[in-house]
Image (cartoon, rainbow, N blue to C red; front, top):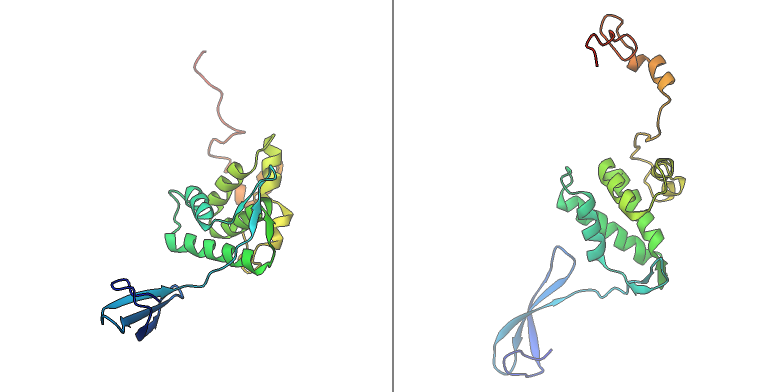
Length: 194
């Protein structure tokens, strides 16, 4: 390590501390000019390349995932700490796969699975932007995507997003209509002329 003051190559380590992010901070003293300086050591991880939909390849970027998650969670009760945790889990998942290349589609599914556990509205926002839908039915099918089950932790169940048949909802005990109050079926006819 060269001294930043005199350029001498020899120094001694005075103090070593492990930081919260896992990096190591070392306080050093130059043996020539006796100046003190600090260095930080971090692990250099080799992330795989991402294969985009059009076939292009680009390096994995935690910042791009963070931006996408922040946009999806905007004005939602999700803290920055939770979002950072999701980014770190996705980054660890990508590295632990041990592949040199990974599809952006697969990373998108992992992000959607993480968002589904974190916040339903953020999940729907991300899914609607991430995929292009032809109709509402395709959107509903995507929300109930069975492939996401491979990415989701089973210990955190979510409610179903499927549409209930209106006739079944009237029979359901939770959706009973009081006969004394006007409802959709027993509303009095409009007495005002058009």
